[in-house]
Image 1 (cartoon, rainbow, N blue to C red):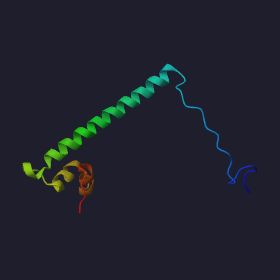
Image 2 (spheres, rainbow, N blue to C red; image 1 turned 45 degrees about the vertical axis):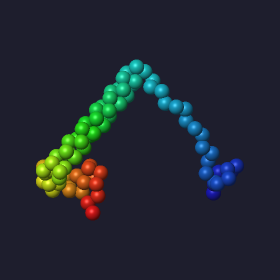
Image 3 (tube, helix red, strand yellow; image 1 turned 90 degrees about the vertical axis):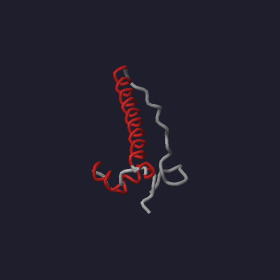
Image 4 (cartoon, helix red, strand yellow; image 1 turned 30 degrees about the horizontal axis):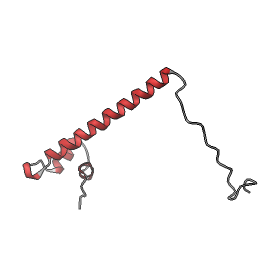
Length: 87
């Protein structure tokens, strides 16, 4: 049976207060993770740009199957990194 006084049988939702770091050390660790994430995003953008240039058929590009083998990925993953469909 549901909770009394609610329309749908579920308990009333009560919002939690927003999180705030409890001390300077926690805030520093959080900022470190944020900086690492930014570095990953930047490296990923550089990787995708370099990959697109290497496999560009207009510039005597490397076959995608070869790049997939070198990267240790499946071809469909390389196509996805390029923003293309395999079909």
